[in-house]
Amino acid sequence: MSQVSDGLVEAVDLEELKAAGRTLITSNGTAIALFYHDGEVRAVDNRCPHMGFPLSEGSVDDGILTCHWHHARFELSCGDTFDPWADDVQTYPVEIRDGTVYVDPDPPLETSPAEHWAGRLETGLEENLRLVVAKSTIGLLDAGVGYEEPTATALEFGTRYRAPGWGSGLTILGCMANVMDDLESEDRKRALYTGVRHVASDCADEPPNFDQPSFATSEVEFERLKGWFRDCIEVRDADGAERCLRTAVAAGCTESQVAELVFAAATDHPYLSDGHVLDFANTAFETLEHVGWEFAGDSLASLVDPLVTAARSDERSAWRQPIDLVALLEDVYGGDVTETSGLERLASEGEGKSWTAPEDFRETLLGDDPEAIVGQLADAVQEGATTEELAAEVAGAAATRVAQFGTANEFGDWNTVHHTFTYANAVHVSSRRTDAVELYRGVFDAALSVYLDRFLNTPPAPIPEVGANDTGRESDAIREDLLETFDEEGSVNEAGRLVGEFFDCGGEPADLKRTLGRGLLREDAGFHTLQNLEAAFRQFDLATEADADEERRRVPLIATARYLAAHFPTRREAEQTFTIASRLNSGDAIHEG
Image 1 (cartoon, rainbow, N blue to C red):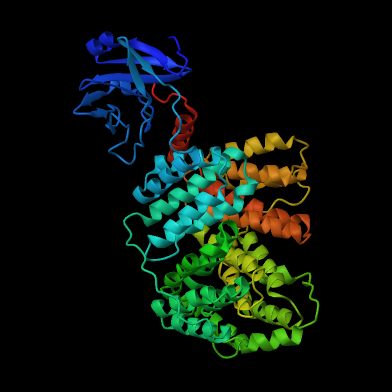
Image 2: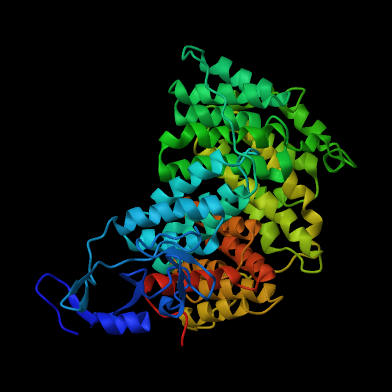
């Protein structure tokens, strides 16, 4: 194949093309299909943009090129598709000189790869197309776009097109953004794909959200606005609550103030919706850290519906019988679970004091005496314990419940201890965002949920003791064994033991986190499993930051390894889609023939 000076390459004799109707040429490794149709010569990339099937084996009729694999249709002259799931096919300019067809195999791009994949990402979200989402997220990261940009796109979509508000999809999106730095480069693509596809799925067939505007004034005092917001949530007035929240954002309240407003309402009743509401709220604020506060209005407004529709644990028998846990809380709070006067008094008495957890503090939290638990926490507040210090202790206890979960329990009970753990983690992280006294209630709620989960540790699964598994093995071999464990059903305790062995043999925590992330993202992991790993990573990091001892630092990762092992392996359908998308984007062949 010869090349002329203006970039064109000689392709085929025109009469030969007329007789055959089509032909296939290759230029610099690119296969180009040429068609003679309606008296015109057309050239397109031979790879169908959907799944890579050779378009030269398709059919042309009435100006439409149809791929025979999945019947994707393309307007032949420009390459545009009739089917959003297929993407447009690349076309190439042609010229006819002296009876010979010439093709330009390297025409200038009409849009950059980043622009192209950004547009395709929106299509994938709108149509809930997994393969399109996978190709788009991979394409964007390969084009040098940071994960924050597509995360922001998915966040905007998820808050606009889901009337019930913030849900599992957006939570997964935020969790994946949170663990991005802990993952291998290729797994970051998997994480972004996971977050975005869950947003698309969560919004599919849902009615769109219609916003309530902020008030036309910015002069309402914060405390009054906070009171209005809580009152609206209390009577389940979503419209009024949204206007208050949007006003707080529009009026320029600080992030800490807006967090105080939201978390106060999220703790006015104990353990709303099994902890999901506060967890959603915390993840919303975390996601904004990745994409920017300019998205706060719509993002935080999407929390209103989960708040007003939440199931309230003070209305559940488990919190009332056989011991009235709500009454224990009311004794501390000041007469009602929505009160904080008692907590304010205790916090005032503890102001300026420095608190250190007694040696038996964690033991009491894991005990079977709710009065002792509530009393211990109240005393700690009075002695100067901050919400963050207490939340750290309770989150550690909640992680222990997962690490010691007995496999003789019903499988669904994994989620019982999981909910407590992720709720406690959310309280802990939220306490670093605002020091609002109301957040102490989240600490008490989490502690009592830890108490309610106590029978799921009967008998407790053993947590590997520090130094008990120092086999001297290479840490890489242990990590390989851990991944193999996830390939086998029921290897829960072995997964926990391997994490203990990894630490005992001097393995680097960052390597272990990458391995756990790899194990998670190759599976069809559900909402709770994705949440669990993110919370475990966060608790490990916070324990490390606080210079906690080795035993406390490793418990969250032992816990999540056991949780992952209990829920793996899966069919790995998402991984198959991701692999296909990766091969298509890199130009590898999918169809052989």
